[in-house]
Amino acid sequence: MSTDPNCIFCKIVAGQIPAQKVHEDDALVVFHDINPWAPVHVLIVPKVHVASLAVAGPGHEPLLGRMLALAPRLMQQLGVTQGFRVVVNTGRDGGQEVDHLHMHVMGGPRPWARG
Ligand code: 5GP
Ligand code: ZN
Image (tube, rainbow, N blue to C red; front, side):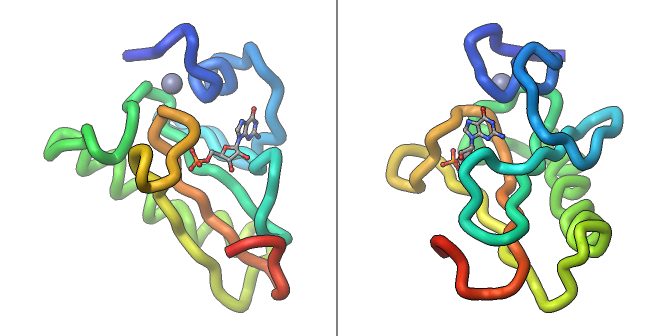
């Protein structure tokens, strides 16, 4: 599996940096964002290093499907019942800060800190 030794999310996947994990399976890790915008704010992160959605191709369709399909199950598990937001910041103008594909999933009662 492709990893980048300098990537912070690869380090979280490898357990080299701690994170508040809420889910892990063969392909994905999910943990709470360190700087949450909403009462519930998690990041769905593939274990494989993919730099961004911009470089995803047809070969990534199963992975992307799994990321998206996991979101409602996670929100249910985390007690979010009134809806949630899914965001994939992509590239510089897309506001992407960590160059490892990830999906923000945010929910919980408003007002939110951001978003
Ligand atoms: P981006 O702007 O790339 O979509 O968002 C990256 C997100 O990762 C930010 O919301 C930021 O708070 C979160 N983040 C960055 N470093 C860490 C970390 O070491 N641990 C956790 N849990 N979240 C992080
Ligand atoms: Zn990575």
